[in-house]
Structures are given as C-alpha cells and as structure tokens.
Length: 491
Image (cartoon, rainbow, N blue to C red; front, side):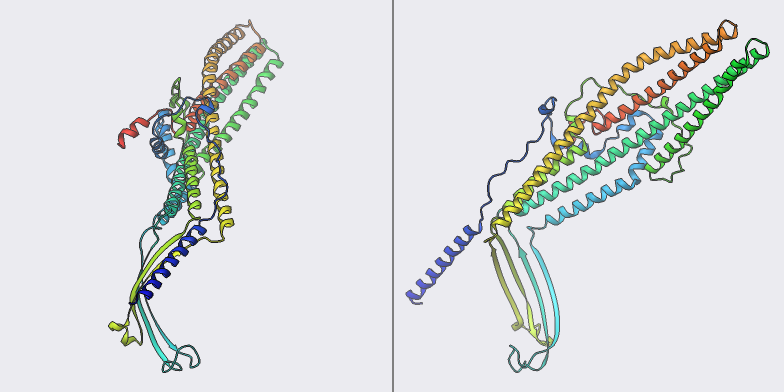
C-alpha cells in the first residue's frame, strides 16, 4: 500500500476519533445548578435519644410483622387475627402491589444482561417489474426466507442501569414494608375491635346487674307500700327505673351485634358468622409498659421503613436521570442465513453475519434532560417530606399512647377506691331502707353512683387494654427490642 494512501487512512481515522470525542463532549449536556434536597428529621430533632443499631435489622423486624398481640393472652383473639391476616381483601391488595413492584425490579435487573434473539421468517412475494429489484427477479414471484440469531448488550458505563435497578429495588422494598404496615394496622384493628366488644359485653353484664337491682328495689318498695310504710310516690319511682334499665340493655345488645359483624368482616367472613363471639375483659392481660422506650423501636415501624426506602429509591432515580446526560453505548451482533428460495436457505453461501456498535449522544436535549432531572429531584423532596411526616406521626402516636397509659394507671387506682366506697354506700342505704331508717331517694342516689362507678371501671379496664394495643401498634410490633437477635441470626 502506498505511503500516501496509508497516511490518508490514518488521518481519516484520527479525524473520526476527534469528531467522536467532540460529539461525546457535546453530548454531555449541562445538568444545571446543584440541588440541595430537604433535610430528613433525626432523633435529636424530635427530642429523642439518638437511635443506634443496624438499619437493616430494623427493616427485617418491620417486615416480619411480630405477633405482638399474643401478649394479650387470649387464644381466640390470636385465631381471629391469624384469619384476618390470611384472608382480608385490603391486605391481599397490598401484597399484590408488592408483587408488582418486585416484578418491575426483576425486569430492571435484566438491563445489563446479554439478550439473545432467534428469528425465522418466510415470505412469498411478487416483486414489482418497475421497482428497485432488477430482472430476472423483477416481475416474478419468489419465496424468500431468513434464519437469524442475534445478541445485544448495553454496558453500564455511566451507572444508569444500576441506578435504575436500585430505584426499582427500593420501590419493591417500600411496597413490602407497606404490606407489613397494612398487616400491623389490620392486626391492631382486629385487636381493638375485640377489646371494644369485650367492653360492650362487660357493660351488658353491668346493665343486667342494674336491672336485677332495680327489680329487687321494686319488690322491696311493693312490700313496703303494702305494709303502709311507703306511698305510691315511692312505688312509682321504683317502677320507673325498670324501663330505663331495659332500654340500656337493648342499646348494648345492638352495639354488640354490630361489633361482632365488624370483627367478622375484618376476618374476611360473612357478617353473621361471629354472633356467638363473647370475649371477656378479664381474659385479656394488661401488660406493664417499660419505663423507657428506645427510639430504635420507632425506626422499625413498617410505614417509617417504607418511607425510608422511598427516599432511597428517589435518590437512585436522580442518579439515573444524571446518567441520561452521558452517551449510551449498545453492542449488537447477528449471524444467520438468508436466501431467495427455500431450497437455498441452508447453503453455505446464504450465511450472513454482522456486528453493530452504536453510540447515542443526547445532543440538543439539555432542556429536556434538565427538566427530567428536576422532576426526579422533586420526587426526592416529596419522599423526604413524606418520611418526615411518617416520623412525626409515629412520635405523636407513640407519645399519645404513652401519656394515656400513664394517665389511665393513675385513674384506675383512684376509681378502684371510688367503686369500693360506692358499693359500701349502696349496701348501707339498702340496709337502712329495709330497716325503715332511710328513704328510697337515698337508695336510688346510691344506686346511680354505684352504676356509674361500675361502668367507669369497665371503661377504664377496656381503655387500658386499648391504649396498650395502640402503643404496640405505634411502635410497629410491641415494645420488645429484638434488633440484637436479628443481627445475631443473620451474621
């Protein structure tokens, strides 16, 4: 080869390389001004002790949905919650959303894989006599066939595909945490509905005792009226108490029926299946709340974990959007057979092969890419704001529950003393009335105080159980910190 010709080729190659470099640099459009995302709330911002420990362990605890409700000590409640978690439609929909997010993450993971195709096609065609195809093919009908295998690969030079994968995995993990949050909320809803039903059953028993007391008082008043010790006024007052007690019983029976139907629906059952369900407050254990609860417990709440993963996914989305500013490289290759006429397809002369390296540059797309990046940055700010909101809600719910628990413990001690005194006062009033030393009005007043104290005792006992359930749910699964156990198990 002449030296001059070889020099021309070298110069042309150098020129092509220079042009490619220039185009690459031109394709790397400006990303615009730097964006400072919103700040995430930390434990110190909320007046809490700094949360330590492994975040991954907290995530595992959140996704495990600890069976905190078993601490209430009622096997029937355990069965109901297990049934609800298995068949509730809302929870099934949440699980389906996770499966969709997981499928999208799996699809994203194939972006850097080598993809292969195999195609076979056959065509019978009449070629135009006046077209591009020359004679003798022009104007005649021929069979053509192709058998081809191809490979394609898109190397992840600038990290675009890895960022997309991490974003998809973050969304999948957030969807899984959402499912765990739905399970935690459903379990709390069943437990609180169960406690509410137990409260109504207990109130129904109080109402029954009240009716029996008023019937006994009416019988005593009738005896005293017949003996000339009481007038019709006292007898009418005693008779007036019976319809009121009966009305209270009917109202409670209605509420009990509705509560049973609510529990049945939560458990994905027909509304009338649980009509025999009669829980007892005495069968439920009131667990002692530790004096100190660590901030780590809030960090494992499923909704907080989901919000945290969405922040991570949004951050990876920004990385993916930034990678769009850089060139995209694709490599494809094919090998196969192509022939005019089926009998020629498998002849050696019908073979064909090729390699196609491709470089795509984002030239004159800076405005679009910057707008896309700003959208991803706004997604990150939104995710951080939602995370901050979830943390604030968690702190408020937990603090409210703790305040209620502490207050109810004090109320219960005071109320127990009031109930004891009301019972003694009623017994003394009845004894004095029987002996003719007291009036019926005194008995009725004492009875009203006793009824109110009995109702209050039931309400306080139910509220103590309910606030503990609310606290366990607010902490994402009780107040036992199992982080160390999870870390040891997964090492």
